[in-house]
Image 1: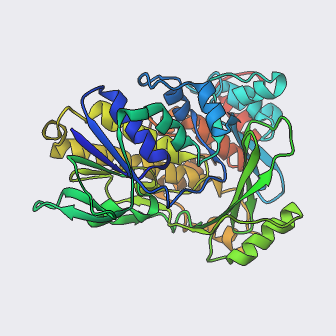
Image 2: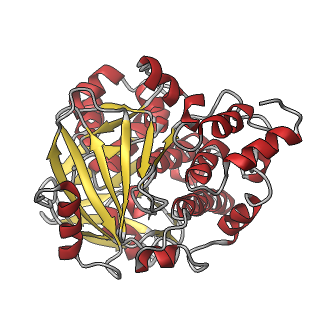
Length: 456
């Protein structure tokens, strides 16, 4: 099959990696990107889904973790420190892993740690807690890295296994049935393919040519602007954490790479201007910053992820917001799902209406469920600004997020309260955040332990 990837960056080069390695010697892959356009790399984080790729759990890529760390300025990530999400200046930790009993009902380790140590200490029952005690950094982690370098790493890993074209896309041509025929480049070269992958980011060049609309999450997640910037790294051995610091109209990320700290303020321009957002960060930090650029986006997902002979991937498929580092995670979930469950040797064998419908159903559910998970982060009771008053109202809630919040008033949600499928942030992650935002309390944990006759 002739596969054409439009766009490079992390999504594009990961796509090339999967298509070449999941079915070796079966497909011809062409990747088209314009290095003139560039990408923003103020610092980025991942989940362990990327670690699975680096550890060759899906297929042998020829990559390894040591090379990845060296090539991408990477550092260890074991969780997220959420600061001031309840408005009182306190922090809570959300580890990437669950406890030793997370797959049970009840999750005794989680409930016991919450009851004994509260929200600032409940992570002691996870790998993050053990790490803070004995610095037990293992390979089973996630990473922080320079976002401009990760695509280059996988490009080097692939070498000459794919055809690489450095050029802008000028036009998308369609066949009579409405599927994509070719891409015409700025240098007039026409590139034909059987399957096209849209990795063109927010511009969504291919999906827009197919008239695929956008399902907005802006009512649920109204942040729509980001100002990324860089700070020098002052700590020799920074905590293995992303910091998400809640501010007046959104939140600021701080991601330590090996040589610097990648930062940015993600906010809603309905509640604060770009100029005032920059001032707010500067007052917080006590010095001026130099934003790399202003990024505008709309939280949401493509109405469909696989339309005719085109699949949207990365930012072209969905972007809820940077919180919880879901973008690379979901890119890999999409690729693994398609390559190992739907893709055959030829396009005729790959495409079926039922297969396409099934793929779209699963991916749309993944993104919508992640939206629900992110909403929960904002339910810590803050009402000290117009933004937080809105986020504390009923308007941002979806039926499922509302149901879970109602459930926490009476008991601690267990594994059967959530759908469980590949790639979804499961019960451990939900419950870390629900506890951190005081929706699961120490008293509720004690009551649950007593209900099951467990002595604390």
